[in-house]
Image 1 (cartoon, rainbow, N blue to C red):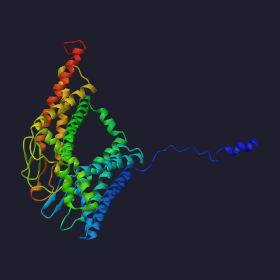
Image 2 (tube, one colour; image 1 turned 90 degrees about the vertical axis):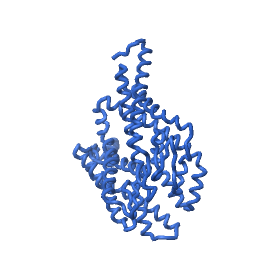
Image 3 (tube, rainbow, N blue to C red; image 1 turned 120 degrees about the horizontal axis):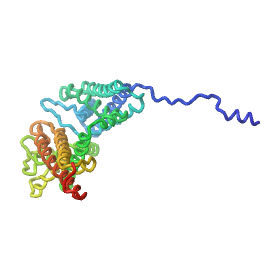
Image 4 (cartoon, helix red, strand yellow; image 1 turned 135 degrees about the vertical axis):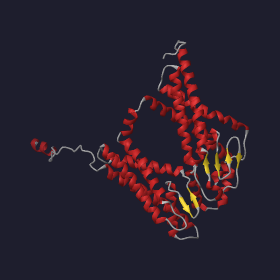
Length: 403
């Protein structure tokens, strides 16, 4: 019985396990991911619009479907034209979710495909961009009407940028190309990028604290505005979602406020630490956070960009140390400058038009914010880095820096 038992325990087919990875071309996986992500977001917005239509008593289901599609296009940065009215403001919260989904789609495409060559990687990024843009363009053509439409050119450009940028980033990270590129950068560039991120985070944190505090102080007014809309349960959920989608816009406006130049909420309006001038505003709950006037403590905000630059300079010198006060000043100053320029330009994403008349001008004074943040954070980064290097040299017992 022993030979029989031994025979039964052996595998009948001695086929070695295949260790080959997926064979699907990355361009095919990328195109599939882009189309699925686009259709998923589009259908979700349409379903929300239909749910709002079911709770109302006007319009048709066709109008609801078109409204949902147009809302998805606006959320993707396509904008909207309704007669002579243009809506160009970007709901950055919605846009961020779209970017995250596309990024995950790009990673999925890389994992489920054969390892791409450089040419195959470029083809995958292009497929991701074109796939998403095609769905957006078709949606814009089908949802457009004489009353409201999304401009086709802007729709295509936004789709290409989102699909290629966010999806391509996922592809690049999953295939190790970003890591390889960062590794080839000179140390000065990597140091500036690291410090810039720290400085920008400090500014964003200060702006977030200010925005949260203002929302808490004016919470009663926000709830009053929400009740006045009489939107019902579904409509109230949509208003809440719209407020969440615009929270990053409000945060960037707060960044500009902290920096000093401030922002506008309509034509001929100003909201800054030095002056607050407002006119009639829509009954939107998020707008309850706007200040009613200036206060003395707001003058202290002028030091926040300098402190953010100091944080950039200190962090970059701890992570990428250099010797010599001149080298420290250069490294800290570059980190602060990069953070100020990047943060200031980012505030430009929150500008645009949100409706007719007064609401045609909305958002931060991004050019002035870029200038103020760049200068203040450069000075803060350079001074903090020099001070840190000087103290470190004294602790080491040398009155002269090593250089």
